[in-house]
Image 1 (cartoon, rainbow, N blue to C red):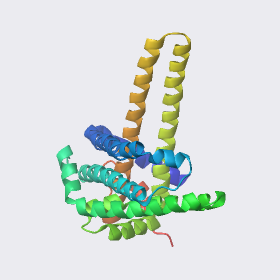
Image 2: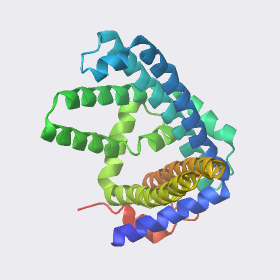
Image 3: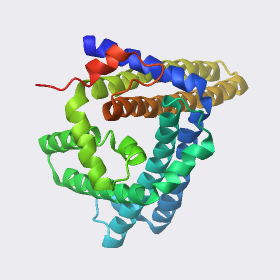
Image 4: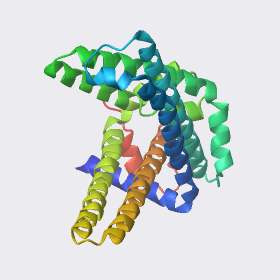
Length: 281
């Protein structure tokens, strides 16, 4: 409970950073739009070629399709990591007392493009291997593979801040992320998990309330109002997702800043940070 309370305090401090720099929301917005465009550019050709029909009939796909899927993974991860790097870079500037602009964040991401691409290749390879194993595994095997995937996600949670702050390649960034995780696993997991739980509840309320009321309006033959409410609900859900992504990036930036320098970022309570990174015996 003590760890959860400290994590929640740092989540609230991250929200304060976001309130002071609302333009940080632009980075996850750009990421969402870009990933949608990349997804359509890869999946529409696959749909036109009949690949999905093969999948529905449980027929093996030709080798070129797997290469295409791998390239999709690389492209998606590159876009996501690029925008996350811009977000974390801007957040680190703010935590150091600066006043970052969107151009500052994207400039940082452009300078890190080569290691970002390398990390995207590694993540895509891991993703493809886990997916191939999952397709061939039984029920319990899928559970094990799912746990391996979760462990990979946790182990690489600090890779982006490391890439932003240090002049290292993707492999060294992963090693540093693992080392940081060894020292602060409780705060990192509980903090980001806390963000997920809170925003999961908010999303469920918006989803059930908005679309539930829309269905009721349709049944009452108030179709125009139902459509308008459905659009508003969709926009609200997108907004919730953007805020969650921004807070997650700020939170990881704050954790990394203290772990690497020992200095408490502005707006974050010192005792909570010290407890977060107390080295385990």
